[in-house]
Image (cartoon, rainbow, N blue to C red; front, side):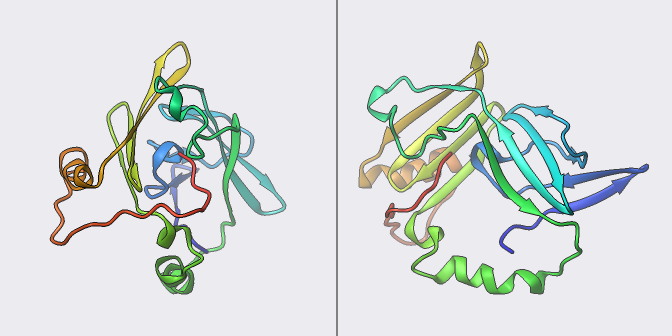
Amino acid sequence: MTHLLLKVDIDDRTYILDGGFGVSYQIWQPMELISGKDQPQTPGIFCFTENNGTWYFEKTRRKQYVPNQSFSNSDLLERSECRKIYLFSLEPRTIRDFQFLCTYLQTSPDSLFTKKSICSLQTTDGFQALIGWTLIETTYNYKDNTDLVEFTDLKDEEVEKTLKDKFSITLERKFVPINLKGLYVI
């Protein structure tokens, strides 16, 4: 298990809360746990489907407009219109259930999180992400069911200033970004 969700029951309805996925896959409001019901939110259309006790969480995205054509084929762009993001069961868990994989994700040379420096922040109309030296700023539903996705490659000396200005992060030590091979899409 690598991802913690909260299940909340209110007035005979069950909701899923997820505050930790980030980038374009982050839900902005709790989602009612109903199989097959499209639930539109600012980032896109989310849906749960259930099969034999396994729940799947998926997102249907809008078209993407990338003004800087040198990034139009970036590996960071999601190509699928609809993507299954993760699966889960409703079996209660404790923090102990997550400890092994949490350590693995933070320390293993095979983990995406040791191969890439990733910082993301939800904004009022989209999100910002810094992946390695690449800053991505996305505005949802910029026009005509299309998201605006702006890419900027940063120089080494611009990274810390960008972290401070865009993400309100001030570092105590020199930061060296990494962006090794590994699948990560926004």
